[in-house]
Image (cartoon, rainbow, N blue to C red; front, side):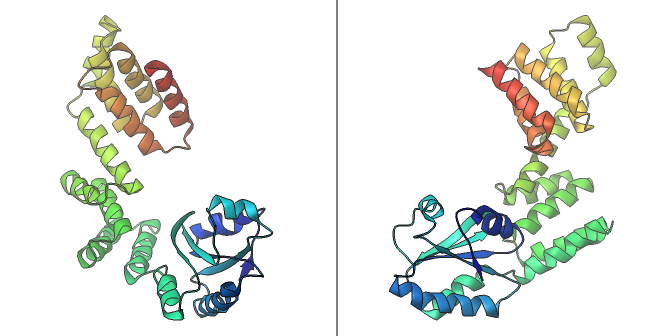
Length: 276
């Protein structure tokens, strides 16, 4: 059990929750129900040691974090996973309900199987990982992370149609979004002839269609610097081309590269300048 404060909350709770679930007990010494709930939480945290972390925050001494969470009544309990709050409850609930709250945060058998399958990728065994993820998704179709990873591996193996089907099952998953973006880039690049496109641009530097097709082709080959430049040029020349297709492909490129990538940051800024 950790005592956390306004100063270390982000480190001890938000960042720590990327490794395992963190349960935050918002309490104060004068709060009678807090003294009832506290031992229940501490007992469960001890029972599930290594699987969850309990953190206690005194709201009297740490008003900033309490205000951030909109705490107006205590005890209040928040669960963090993956750097964000995922569930909460108010008041001194009975032990069975608190236990249910905690157990909902624990890894399932599908979670554990997915970790093992991911390890196969790290070991250079993508075919074995694909087989394992196929089994996980067949047994638990609602397992989002495994479905997204299966889509990724299917695309890597050349099964574009089924990869798209799997990714569309979990469209809000970031990995699935990247897979769908990669598929759209690949389809836009299909049948593009680099030599012919470059010849067209040599003859007419304002050929928005050629810029768009060449940008898609280069993106599909992961030649990102020139790809993004070509797509941005196409947006600049003809925003309406194929229903704003060049801008949408730029956004797909940003998804594939990730928000932290320097090219993403540069071209997102430049795209904004072109649009606005």
